[in-house]
Image 1: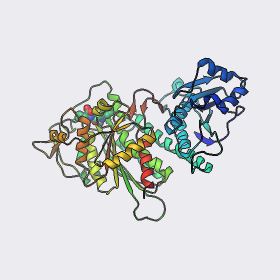
Image 2: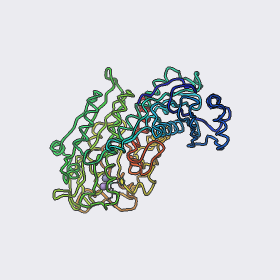
Image 3: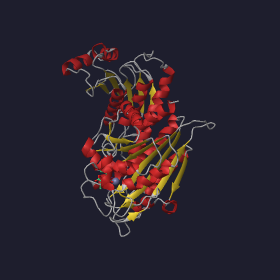
Image 4: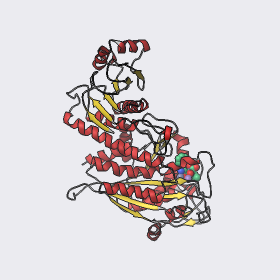
Length: 503
Ligand code: BES
Ligand code: MN
Ligand code: ZN
């Protein structure tokens, strides 16, 4: 999809024109007026008849029937004219333009442009157009896709301080690139587990890195065992598809700089989680193809950094395995060592994510990160606590957590800072090993976080994101269809950029 800045007038050759409006400005909106004039007053008449007020998330669609070149005109209410409002409205525009089989779309932003708003517009149009149609054939295949989007700004002169018009084009293309990375995460999550298993997952990461000249090291099962990642090995041994461990490294161009910060991101990569011997019930088991969403964020991060080129060293790591029941599978009652050295008594083979992450976090902590972040579809308990659209965030550093909350707000992603309640550690005491990997049922998401914390070595700045809920949507969201959402990447990228900007 091509997305560019450009003028949009009523006589412009676009299949669909989407005009973003705010409640405050609708009455005097000069773009609406210009289209109304070209349509002989039909647009204002419709607004009046429908009593449309440009409320947040509302839409008024109109078919001009030959009076202007456009086949459809949408008026979209943005609510507050902020990044979240613009992103959502633009996503709705491209989603509906796809449904209307449009090839060309024009979007007129609501208020005075700024870099942040133009970037959000780029993110929105590219996110909203997303579909996972790879496996559809015949009639089920989408007939057409929006191929070109023109984004028009209301005022030539930006009202926002410090914003130069020349920077808008770059803000727009950044937004489109970021959305491309989110869409790649969605593709990985939506891919069925017979196609995406540890080996093919690692291969996709490797080919992305090769294309962007990013270093990528893949460990196969033999190497994983030789290096002492006993927990990753244990989880993966029940599957014909052997586990993989992947470490991707982005280093900024140019000479090495002193004091350059290091961000390390780790993801849970269960390409399918059947529960293992403690097998899950059949209903909903297929959704467990999404259990690699955390790892997919690591890959998406690398896709985005090659476009954003932050002045940071960025490491993206994931541990990929398939959790299956088998004669060779790990069992409840087993005791396994770990890369860290601690021994772990296995209680429930369905609590596999924290095991593969334990080894990956130990490895990551050895890189001495300034900030260490993991993403994992870790616990159903987190969904019980926060619902399915909000991630649980845990951290051993409250100041860092506060920064992450701020990044999430800017990104429009919902998360909640959860406590690491020390008393709950008791339930992980084991009679025969250093610790059990599960404890009481109550507080299950917290216990998951406490277990992971045992494996971060000396790292003082760690965040754990339990994304079990928002990684996979059961109904369409403001930004995309059912299925993989790519949740977490927009927040992570904003955090990364603020980290790069810090002195
Ligand atoms: N992958 C699941 C968690 C999950 C549940 C992710 C729903 C997405 C949607 C995880 O491996 C798991 O099975 N967790 C168990 C932990 C329990 C056995 C301690 C759970 O949540 O029931
Ligand atoms: Mn599980
Ligand atoms: Zn799992």
